[in-house]
Image (cartoon, rainbow, N blue to C red; front, side, top):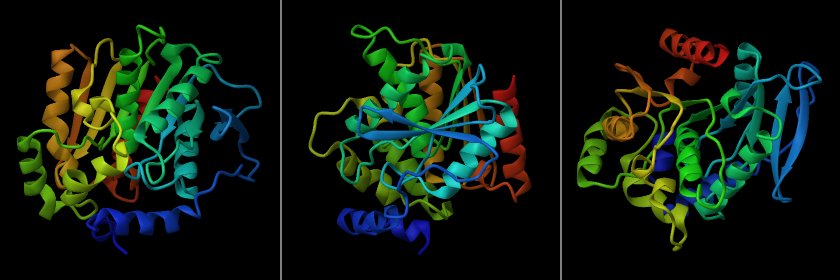
Length: 290
């Protein structure tokens, strides 16, 4: 089944489909010998896969967030991709298996992710941690820093050193955002605007009070954000959010770079058999290697 047709389904039918797929996405330690792997327990019930080339950790690390609209699990392809980013950049990689919104409120997802980041801070200097995320994982990379700002009166947690967000999601808040997504929908071969406009918010919030930044990522507090790189393609519905992220970055004086690739599709840097995808991945690795 194509991604677009799956994401065009009504909420109940969509959840039924992804829950079956997620049965293959259980946490496990890879059995290859090319890396050292560790299971880092988080909040007693969750797992974070820690990957490092050497037995001892390096000075720098990636906190890697998989995508899937907060409802699709972490599969072997994600682990392979995260490992590649670590291997090529010379950084350790932490891959949290955060609770999905198939059964949890998005507040649980952010709670686990925030705790993972705090565990990392015991091992690495904050400026040596880079957040890397794709799709909803890109939203998490940005949203985690919004969360740090949201809780700063209770917990003084430092910002990481870098954000790289590929096709970050943000549930449209304004009619202008919705209209732009609707206009882009015929060009998008992967995501359907119905999912972003009408379906995903209800799945994420579960009738609970949820901070705006956890759903409408562009509405977060971006104070003291680190250097942020955003990647979008012109043929994806989430490209509708590019100008709204840009407005937020300018409002909070964030150092950022917006990378827009004409004619490409959602999360194109993941598809390195396309020259444009390989070029973008190489560029991201370069940012992580500096």
